[in-house]
Length: 227
Image (tube, rainbow, N blue to C red; front, side):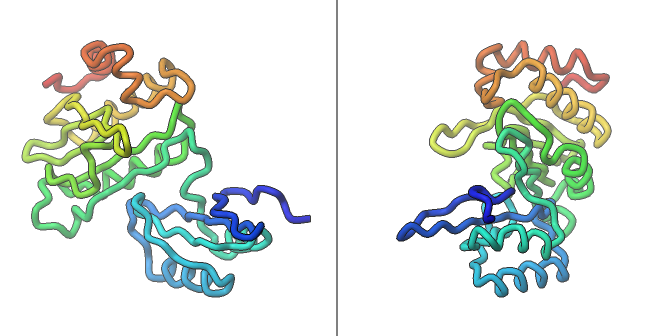
């Protein structure tokens, strides 16, 4: 029997009573190997699906029949990009390793963060962006947590928001090493998980308790430069 809601799939528009679904494999930082790209194309072609490059640096496979979703996942051999809406959905990265403007080669750090945190449960959907310079090519300034390469290391921003309630993130701390970034980030995530309300976005949580309290509580737990 065909399941009513295929796993790790999003229901699309229902046309003439017909349901189709989209799936999105996890592609860390948008860096996809040639073999993965070929496999995605083969699966889409086999099931007569369309491909869409998403704003989250992934490739969505759209227009799948309900009975083909599980087969497509099995053939892809890739993890889902989103297992739960209330999670760390994205760890987005610029192309710092290849960019002449990058102040830090932030891709290695971004990949570490993706492995540590992608998909973990959170009070609400949470997006992290890791970039090599202040140009912020992944819209880092509107992400829940931003990690930005500078001449002196990294700075971390928090509380950004896109969509219809756009908000520019606030600078939490600057002049961090990679190890400092990992320590502060882990502290932010655990503090938000412990104290944020169910479905409360990070920027709403920070607004509720006050930015200065948030900053003080985070930095008091970390052995880093307090600038």
